[in-house]
Image 1 (cartoon, helix red, strand yellow):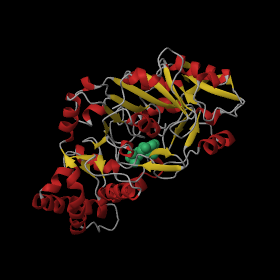
Image 2 (cartoon, protein in one colour; image 1 turned 90 degrees about the vertical axis):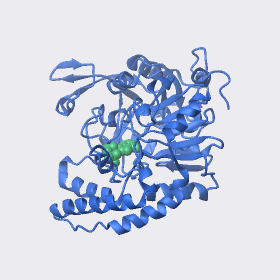
Image 3 (cartoon, protein in one colour; image 1 turned 90 degrees about the horizontal axis):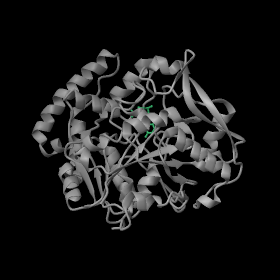
Image 4 (cartoon, rainbow, N blue to C red; image 1 turned 180 degrees about the vertical axis):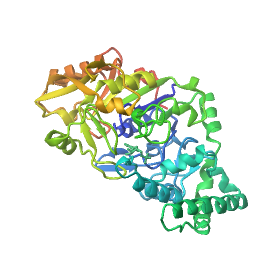
Length: 442
Ligand code: IMP
């Protein structure tokens, strides 16, 4: 049975949640492999809109095992809140949810530290979600993090916390802020968390490995996206984890050899929330119009997203670093009323044509996008599920994206709910059959 990675190909918010939800029926296990509750995966169930930040959206499907992998950072309060929210909706959250003993914890001082350092950066701030994600990963890499498995060893945990809290307070004081982080309070919060969370804690790498050995199908759910990846994104305006497809292996503790298929999720235009370059940013009335039509507000923070034209330099780059097998285009219907739609085909840097995404921010900031303008279809595509029903100009738009990005478009989303999806692009095999094979249902 195939193991699939779902990965964002732009700056996040591409609509991964919808595809993970759509595919979860066909897999046995869904694994989050990076990030924390900075993510906002929106799933629309009938009239209800649900946003999941940490727990994989596979949890909405009976019989699917859900894993928060070792590459994630876990905020105890956010975990308990989300778990309680799901249970309140009558969704089972018991022995179908697993938390890696190797995942790192986000502690209250991480949020404090982040607030202080973002403030200090002034105009150069990253525009983070301020949820302590970056400082928790900093501690992980500096080898002073606290991991979920540490909750099993209270005395050692207390000793470590006392030392760390003293260190953090000293830093906060050095920045002229009140050093009021309290180790006792944190320990008590963690004790409460451990009472509930430890029943979910296990060696998830082993759990996933055993599922694959049994021939079960695993979906690796990417969070954030390629251009926010710590190594391959627009550094330093990135998140702190490995958001590309390769992160699925390290963030889950499985061999890269188990991955069979990599699905790139791509919005029909582009958005970014937070600071940093966005070469095809629209700005002005058009930017506002797309934001309004696409409801482009951060699912985690509510911040307005910056909107831009489709950038094929970005998605070609995402194809290279992820090795995409197919693209799923989302939010096509948001472009329905436009008279003309632009696609960025390349950048011009100091007069020279640049086909590849540059590494240095100073170069990217000077890049001027080159556009191809296509006529809009000016007809509603909302809810269309058959290729034959798509306006010809919309099909041309999709064909141009496919040709410019070098990846086949195998699914198209025409609305937020599960059913508003085109899954047969007329290339001989419907998407789900191609991705999972004929006997895909479990
Ligand atoms: P952090 O992940 O909170 O450290 O934020 C770093 C950058 O990643 C900021 O620009 C955030 O807006 C962005 N970011 C983090 N998570 C998401 C997401 O799920 N969608 C879109 N942007 C995100």
